[in-house]
Amino acid sequence: MSLWEYANPTRFMATTRRIVPVVAVLSALCLAVGLVWGFFFTPDDYRQGSTVKIIYIHVPSAMMAINAWAMMLVASLIWLVRRHHVSALAARAAAPVGAVMTLIALITGAIWGQPMWGTWWAWDPRLTSFLILFLFYLGYVALWSAIEDPDIAADLTSVLCIVGSVFAMLSRYAVNFWNQGLHQGASLSMDREEHVADVFYYPLLLAIAGFVLLFVTLVLVRTRTEIRARRLHALQMRARMA
Amino acid sequence: MMPDLGKYAGTVLGAYAATLLLLAVLVLLTWARGRAVRRRLEEAEAEAKEMRRG
Image (tube, rainbow over all chains, first blue to last red; front, side, top):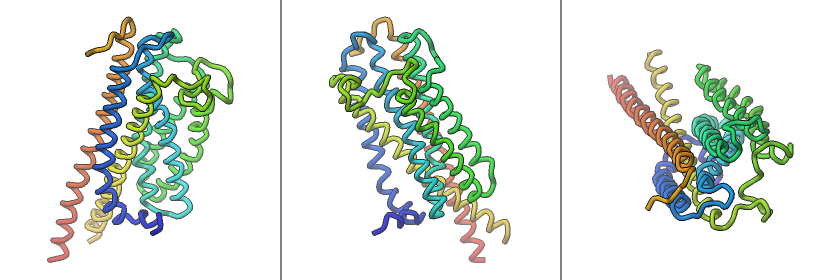
């Protein structure tokens, strides 16, 4: 069976109806265990004190902010190349979720930065590229809402998504490109020097899994809603013409 | 049960509260819109069926 069969809205609805409850329960489990483990049962860091507990929400949300845009990019390219409506609607569905993830990363970063860096905000390469990524998310959502014709909206938002991918990439690699600014390197890295200690690592992995699964759940639910909204719009147009 | 967060208690709790609030709003809005669209689609499909009948 080809992957493209899921581009059929009827098939997509039938498949995701069974998948959504499973992913939602797994997401809730991973989030509950990861966050409770991280918050209640991990020690303070010798330099950062108890603020290290913010890592369990800041790192997963920041990862999802970038990965959501990457998913939107893939879906947008599929729309541009193969004109599958479900992929365009999935990209649309992912944008508000990605925007909220970016906002969480910005807010928790500012809250964490204040005691550690002595400031809520700095025009650091990673922080700035994240702020621009957030503005791209808002622009993407606004562009979808502003255009009546769904195919034109999908075309234009796909182009915007490709342009915004530069900032999604910069959000991830800005620290490596410009070796300056306040933000440290990756928390999860193959390099033992950079890597967080094992005591923080496992609850962090669970929290990341929870955020990934929450993202998948929300995108599937929102895509199902977008497909229904498209069908509703078609029925309303047909009724108006009758 | 509550860990001793020391002088950073406000910082840590504030970060968690903001995150949980934003996630809760996102989940609620997703659920509410899904429900509303589903109900309107069911109504529209019922109307379309009525129109086809007669």
